[in-house]
Image (cartoon, rainbow, N blue to C red; front, side, top):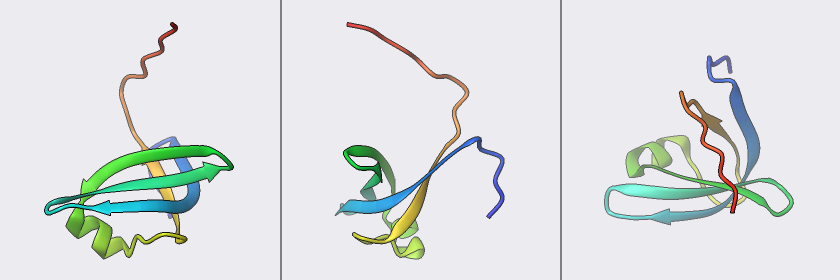
Length: 69
């Protein structure tokens, strides 16, 4: 797989919450470190995303915002 995005995080699908139109995917990229995103239900099905399957979270963003409390 070759992509232009600089941030591709490999992990294991921990949870899939399927709705009528979208699916929320939680990927564990390290013990205790998770990334959650929302994609279309059709995309989740086409990718075969299911708990325990390896996948990548690919992040392409023009802005990163940092904050402190």
